[in-house]
Amino acid sequence: MEFVSEKMNRDLAVTILNWKYDTPYDFYNNDVSEESIEELLNEGYRAVVDEAGSLTGFYCTGPSAQVPAGRAEGVYRETAIDIGIGMAPEMTGKGYGYLFFSFVLEELECSRQNHPLRLTVANFNKRAIKLYENIGFRKESELKTLTNDFITMVKR
Image (cartoon, rainbow, N blue to C red; front, side):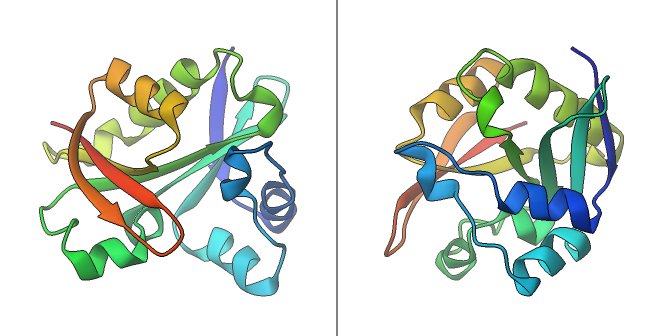
């Protein structure tokens, strides 16, 4: 499967915000609102499509990839490139994660400039944590919020 990233547009943003995941991954479900659409359009998000042009996922970098409570807790003090990703629900749990995330990392390699890569993942998401470990990320810190526990993982 081949992937291409493209600038996020309103239609893609609305499609992503309408994605519905099964329990326990329904934590990642969103509501469609003007505010959430604007975030996807203006905060460093990129859409990822396959060779047929079908939307397969997205990624973002910078503050959009951080859990806001983590900034207050100081888990993002070290300079790093923060990454957030999301895959279409119909693709999750089917072995596409490695290809998808490897593509995202390749896309970001030119802007990395020897900075470590960092991501924040919900602690319950063992499937994603295993993927990240297989790609070389290691647990760095823990973060508790009112709704969930998270870990940050870093690849140097």
